[in-house]
Image 1: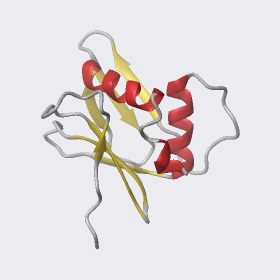
Image 2: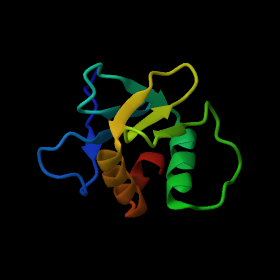
Image 3: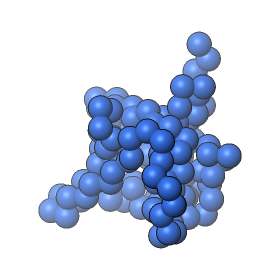
Image 4: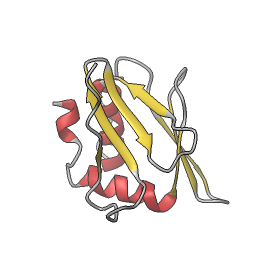
Length: 114
């Protein structure tokens, strides 16, 4: 099987670990390159599209097919977790998450749901 091509936001500093996204025939994959556990969350294009819309502040449309992605923030330590039922949880920090969200708002990940 061909290795996925991972993409990070252009807002992530060069050489920095960041949230990465890739697509394969089995779904959309999300990981954090600094995660020592190497968790990779796999979801559907519909669920990823719903996440992108949510991060842009767009109105919700029909519920996505497959489990919805949930963003959990811990204000005390700046940890951000991306979770879906039955999938590994991807953990990052606020700075890396914010770089990902800026990329989402700039449309850098739209091609994953086209």
